[in-house]
Image 1 (cartoon, helix red, strand yellow):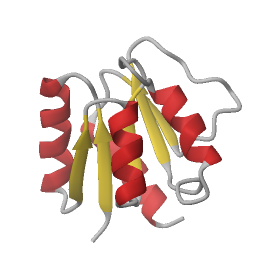
Image 2: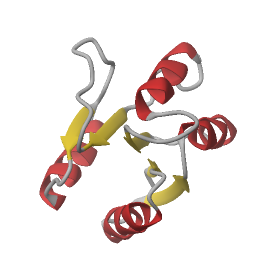
Image 3: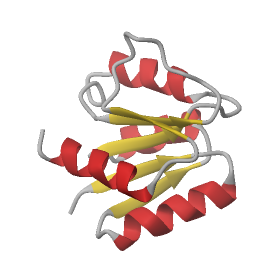
Length: 116
C-alpha cells in the first residue's frame, strides 16, 4: 500500500485532504508543519509527500530543501500546494497544485508518481 504524508497547518484542509486521499485507498499520515513532517518522514519514510507551502516553523519550500539534502528522503516525491506561493523553477518537485485545485488534479499526480 502506498503511504502518503499530508502536511498542512490548517486542520480543516488537512482533514479534507486525508479524507480524499484515504478514500482512494492510500495509507495516510499527517503532519501540522514542515518540522513535524520531516520528523515523521525520517521515522517512517512515505512514498510521497503532499505539503502546503505556507506554514509556521518550516514551510513547504524549506521542507523540500531538507528532504533533498537527506539521503533517506532525497528521492521521495514531493507535491507542493499553495494559493499564494509559486515555487522557484529549479524546485525539485513531483508536482505543484494551486489552491483551490480539483480532486482529479491531485489524483492524477498521485497516480503519476506511483508509476515513476
